[in-house]
Amino acid sequence: MPQALHELKETASQTAGPYVHIGLAPGAAGFDIYRNELGHDIAGPHAVGERIRIEGVVLDGTGAPVKDVLIEIWQADANGIHAHPGDPRSGEVAPGFRGWGRVITDFDTGLWGFDTVKPGPVAGRDGRLMAPHISLWIVARGINIGLSTRLYFFDEAAANAADPVLGLIEQVHRRQTLIASLSLRDGKPLYRFDIRLQGDGETVFLDI
Amino acid sequence: MTKPAAFFQRDRTWHPPALTPDYKTSVARSPRLALLSIENSASELTGPVFGHGDIDPGDADLIRNYAHTGDPVGERIIVHGRVLDESGRPVPGTLVEIWQANAGGRYRHRKDAYLAPIDPNFGGCGRTLTDAAGGYAFRTIKPGAYPWRNWVNNWRPAHIHISVFGSGFAQRLITQMYFEGDPLIQRCPIVRSIPDPRAIEQLIAPLDMNAAVPFDCLAYKFDIILRGTRSTLFENRLEGN
Figure: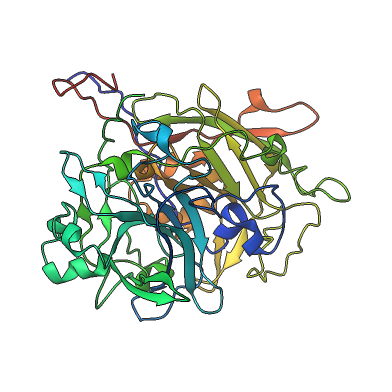
């Protein structure tokens, strides 16, 4: 026998289940318990950059909206800086900008949405710039391990074309599943990002 | 802090696959195409940072954090353990959030209609930050088993849902903790979505009499392991060793 590595195994995932709101968004479960529910404000009031709204639905393999999903958001600020000590420029992030949020779907329609600032480009592993994007993590009843994906922006065509992650998607037409469309609502940019768990137009999910 | 090193690759054979037909809801909610594997960039190596300003110390005491007219009904327990990475290093200052049913197996949730009663003094959620050694502790009520719609006679074993962050978004994890000795564990299609019996055993918390408080409450110990950080030997810096 060779020497042992003495590594531990990651705790196995289990579904967040239908009552995930109790733990992560108790107000939505129907009760008020914490002084401060986390994840409601992604960008804070002082962040620079374009204020945008993003909306969408999560569709199952039959095309029905998933009404009990919870999505977490992680993003850089408009200058491409993450609010995390591992980012050498994290000290430049505006007070109140966390870059993280948590949204749930409407129990009747399955629609979700959040307000934030549009992120800037972030350096990739080899120093190549990645197109502006938002990381999403999706959990729900029936999802055994959280699904990771990225949202890119329709109006960043040149940056998207050079993005190292989008470029890894072998079937070129599938890259469109990660690009949010753009319209205006009351003069404010509204991006639409529908996530298809399965079937025609299945969203590209990432093993990160 | 220097730029974080990449995480150990996630062992997808250890986790449940997306499609587990005996857990029926997974059938229409599971991607059919392969995940795209990408190397960690700043977007995956960083993640939200939480502090003591975000939560209150009392949030970790589920016996008291929603008590209105007295303590909740049920078996009083402490659930404690450490959050470690795959190299055995503590993960300090990370947010741990839990949620669960009450002693009768009923959730305080607008969508739960099980006939067991709501406990007016039990909310069923708690949160805390790990200490410098990665340690955490909650005080709560042992949750009850409850029936759920899958087959006509499926019962969830007693369990507590646990959400953990780690230092990077790629470590994000939600799991469930089960209790030693529960005969429902091996009958549960959600538990059995995990293919490796050793991975299931890792979700079962042992009774920990040495952490019990005499004449007050029992205790269960549950360590949570997050993805480790890779060594960067012979790259541009030494890290993670």
